[in-house]
Length: 628
Image (tube, rainbow, N blue to C red; front, side):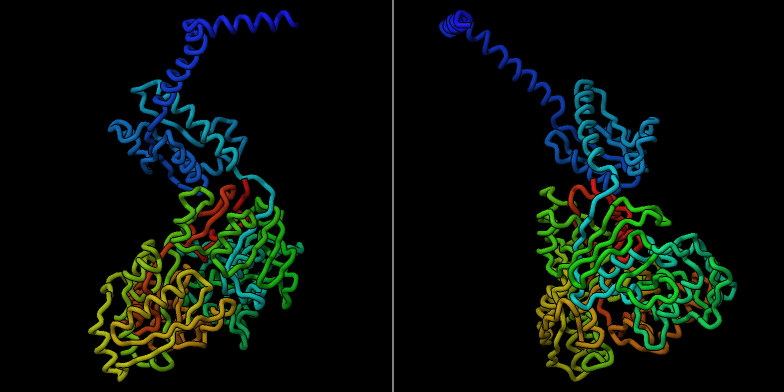
């Protein structure tokens, strides 16, 4: 062994003494590394790619983001399949990544993948075969790694953190109002129908429905479904649930929409068929079945300490204002959830919700500002989901009390609001101005009315006419939801231009949404998505249970009833326009903006539907979410 070491030592000394030998032994490997490394870098550096994605789901977008984050690739945008060839020929991209329309399903189904069904296809410009070959291989490895980490997998507990209502929260699904309560209710219960992403009613426990020619009788066929205790969902359960909502002493939110049901004359034709008789024609009755809080509970249910529903999760535990835990329902009629458990946590502090996500204490954070989203989106620490145009912002003026019992004062406030400034400052530019009407872009929305802007001179004249030149008013607001307080403070500055003093009063975060039903002459307000018909029936009729502006006009109620009495779609649209003109002229809501609803998830969360506005069927659809 000693002889061998002496030999090695002697040869090393020879190499070090001879410069040419040292250059050959050490220099050539370095040169090879530089040359070949440079060649590899040049071949796959600065590859521009475009994406074809018929359905850009969260999983697809995550894959695109993985590619775009790589220094060798530059994302040039989405193109259609028909445009892809032209993009390559024109040199606007070196590669096209084409995702299958059912990418999520393909990547989740090993059997289909084994049969050769492609989830992704890569098309490269072949004018440089070396670049195409190297780039395709590298891109494929990135996509495969992402696919393996992002495919739906069963198991795990997802922790979702929402703003909440404190110790007053309940599990009674007929009393749901806050987003945390809605998320819990839809985990445990089902409605007959729910709003789709396009605001149309989608069948849920109702398999189908049909109306009589006079629109006064609706026959509902139930699908085969079971409650968590094994009992089947029956027509008797549906009738009991609606009767519970419609009790005379009830203030339940769904009561306004369902009040048209003539319960004494409605009946169960059999266990799976309900016949609703109505007190008047109702062309959009499926909207009422989808309305917030219209959940079906087992016949005879009064207590909800341990609720039993038919939803995708079964109740485990609940601590009001803090946490809710539910377990997977393996027998769910719409397919068992991927998750083993769902935990919903409560925090009214946006920073705390984000920190829980960043610190690994939660995987889903609801209701973030545009500023927060931008702060973390580029870092890649979390995934930002923008639920399209489902966050409507307003000031709600109570029309039954001074000073807003005078229509001139309400009109003056319409003219005081600088909507563009609010969108810039409160929504950080990530929204659109509204026009004092709810539901911009939705069916029946009247976009023919002139867009209002600030008109201080007109506002002053209206206030003078009302004898309110030196008006001073309190505006109730809160930090319970992002933007409420900021909007109130910004409007207070705008109102000063007309000599109006707005004193901003900060309300209790835990009770704000219940407080504003009666308190305050004007309050900060916002709403999630619902059809315009549901907005009217729940908030603007004389008998509406959430009529926060106290708008009570018999002539307005009559227009609504006429709209529901006609099967003529054009005539109904005309009547909705007439209702909206009344609201535009002298209503109590000043809708100033609309923006995306923003939620954030940990990067290992899949299945969040970014096309689903808040309040709709596929929003907070935790039975479709998974942990990769």
